[in-house]
Image 1 (cartoon, rainbow, N blue to C red):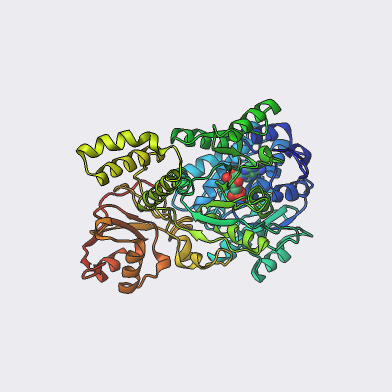
Image 2: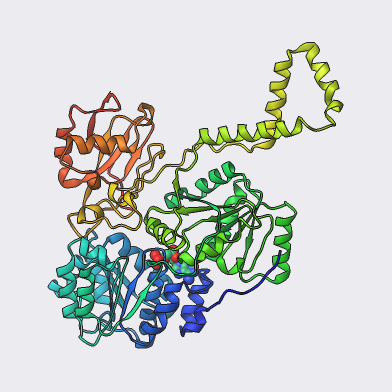
Amino acid sequence: MTESSDEETTAFADLGLRPELLAALSGLGYEEPTPIQREAIPPLLAGRDLLGQAATGTGKTAAFALPVLERVAAGGHRQAPLALVLVPTRELAVQVSEAMYRYGRDVGARVLPIYGGQPIGRQLDALRRGVDVVVATPGRARDHVQRGTLPLDEVQVVVLDEADEMLDMGFAEDIEALLDLTPAERQTVLFSATLPGRIDRIARRHLRDPVRIQIGAEPAAAGRAPLVRQSAYVVARAHKPAALGRILDVEAPDAALVFCRTRIEVDQLTETLNGRGYRAEALHGGMSQEQRDRVMGRLRSGTADLLVATDVAARGLDIDQLTHVVNYDVPSAPESYVHRIGRVGRAGREGVAITLAEPRERRLLGNIERLTKQKIPVETVPTVADLRARQMELTLATLRERLSDDDLDSYRVVVDTLTDEFDLTQVALAAVKLAHEGRSSTVDEEEIPEPFVAKDSRKDSGKKSGGKKDRDKGRDGELGGKERGKRSRSAESGADGGGDTERLWVSVGRNAGVRPKDLVGAIANETRLSGRDIGAITIAESFSIVEVPASAIDDVIADMRRTTIRGTAAKIRRDRVSAPPA
Ligand code: AMP
């Protein structure tokens, strides 16, 4: 086990950010900037325009938020906003506002999300009191401008986040109009996962001599992944701890290194894993050498099986007995994936790399595949039955090994005594049971639902799916497969207005063997909706809930009056429980 520090490091402090912001980042457990932050923050602080190609998960939000917050801190608080961030969906508006609020708490940043579907009164009150940053969907921002409630004449920075998505959703005209209403000398920042010609045209018209940054989109020369068995699992955030546990149970690693993005995640996951009966240790960037040595010692001696760490904390670690590397999130830079998985599969031994991706992070997997020129197969999370089968296999293998032990005779007295009373097979079965129970921990009975991914986005993580319809089902469109009748709260409707969904109650569920694709198939066959229009699906024991566009629900109910789903005649009606908005 050795430690070296051959990897270059840049700290947030090197980027020229003020102490209040550095303190916030440190408080959030961010240990170092991601590549996009490293490249984007200095030119943005210098006032340059920027055109960035980066997907979700690269850390792009902080890349534009921190320079905006520097301006807020420097500018003093005024009535009218000094920054306007445009985003495609209300989910993203909320997410970006929350991130900006967290980063900017110590500079007193007043951040307001503005999106359709939210009572306008609250937005008006906040605007009247004065805000520094408005994070808005373009349609709703334009409504406010037309009402005269969102002044744009003091805007110093405009950020277009996920610009390609905004264009796909038909917001081009709103964006153009909003840009034309802001001062010409403003700074303009455009982030987009893809750079089609339409984005280029916006950039040419509205950005001045922009710095261009591309993260993870092109294969870099450097990265060649070592030969390691790689796989990924697409799991909704809420199910990640359970999914990780299940995967670890099936993989049964000798020693695994689990990577998280932040120190706080490291602590939380370590606690969760210990609570679930794993022997996990956290490794921090801030730990003393002595503490690190102690943790490493526990891993080496087998008193710990899992090491949970950030990239920084694990830098330079070289652990001989490591069999598995787990990415609890998709790493924000494809290069760090290569670094991480390079820690296993050394000296001709088999190494395994496992990556958990949230549905929205699938695109990042594509970036990694392009860099490493290797496919990362997406597997389904093992079921309870898979785990039981695997545990039986392991018991079998353990017993087979024991059969060649040369001290078995010392147990003969037990067998002989028992066979006076019982059949030999019965005795063997009881002994196997004992061995099995001693080996395997109890099985968590909960099945882990597979996220529902719309047809188009399933095709390829690097390809775009288009159309406003996509957005109407929410960003993740997660499937709560075993929610035990609990309503899925994941399907927030997408865009500004027009994105309302309603819940259909369907009288068949898991006990009829119903899977999401059966519901999608039945609806797509019988009605005018396509798979893309269908939102979150929750399959409970005896019924299912499917989200469909509100405007279509009556037609869907009428069209599906005589439908059978997996051979069972299904009753379909509006869901009576109206779920609270998430
Ligand atoms: P984004 O690409 O902006 O959606 O960010 C993806 C995730 O990475 C978010 O959960 C952030 O909180 C997290 N994140 C962003 N920057 C960093 C960083 N420098 N270190 C650790 N986590 C980060």
